[in-house]
Image 1 (cartoon, each protein chain N blue to C red):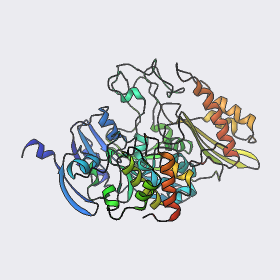
Image 2 (cartoon, rainbow over the protein chains, first blue to last red; image 1 turned 30 degrees about the horizontal axis):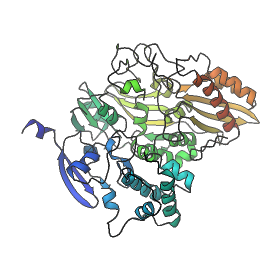
Image 3 (cartoon, chains in turn purple, brown; image 1 turned 120 degrees about the horizontal axis):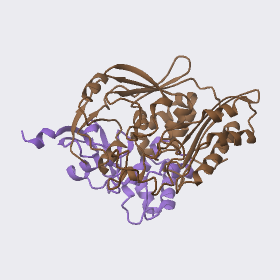
Image 4 (cartoon, one colour; image 1 turned 180 degrees about the vertical axis):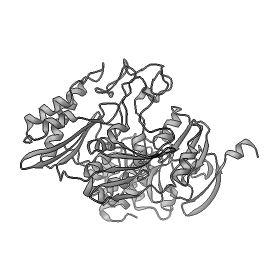
Length: 163
Length: 337
């Protein structure tokens, strides 16, 4: 066995409902596994340091920064990315609301914003705009679309149309 | 990130054994460790993943205390019903920190063991005694508006970044650890250490020890508590100054006071002096101002953080007013009452 193969660690993940068995180096983050190994490039790499939230995905139903998770430590987990939230034919209510409210400019933070917002709604702790702003503070938008992002989330939250 | 060997531990004994080789570090939530590895600040040769250990429980103890498993996440603790009843100050402190995503991954023990966010500690192109002993402190005469006003040394002026630990300090928490030599309990005040001449050592946890839980004594402060955090933006920022207060009020007087500050010192800064000023007194502003003066006794400013002394003084007074009025700071509405 060559030196590289000795360092590989088996990881089993269910990503967007599909079972994957991979062998990866232990320093591969969940973000890099999703993007580089599974070609799921909807999840974005922003700061890669847990500060911007662009890499937000759901692991076992909870929103996390995938850039700070070593994939090997999540063996056996279920992961949902923006690709798993909906299909182009049947968009997620948050996706519709983001379009309706013009809740993005460049769009780079949007997959993270939407995954984070989907979790926020599922958590059921946000009552209104103030709570949305606080509980979405882990998702930065350098274009400054915050007002419209809150509008979009508030609409889905109050309509009770969330997942 | 450097290359490293990866090992999974399936029992505490496994973990302790796996920690023997020098250069080994424990991986829990990873929110700080993985970040530090990406910056090259820490370069472990081996990681022991302890996420499979059965240390996630949040339990009420006989008599009203709480035990928080080392691997309980910050979110689990903040929203756990027993914590709302038996340690609401802890829940509030947690919710003032980080983001929802980070709180879902970060653990109780990891919070205790996180490193400073001093920008020079993170910047491997600059000298830093905490990162590389005996290279010097870049913050001492550098950009230091976030840095310590209490407890620092001329070797290191970095502050401890935790919010949760400020509440733990105020509440006399106990840290349960296990190592090759057996189990022991560390009083919270003894867990973190001051930098002195060895700022690279943050805590009294030994290299072969792992934290198994944090215990809190029974809550006896009713709604007379608050966690008040002052920072550069309203959310998702480290404290310039934070204050945890809990008061036991009986017959219109403060029977017992607990007061700790965050963002001002290399460790969560409990002020026994301020507590002594408050004990036995009626809860009123003049007393709070005297307590604040005592809490900030000996504070010294660096070139860029003189404002923090007065800011801390005022934050202590305001926090005491909130606690006395049984009006804890909301971590959602940022209005300071």
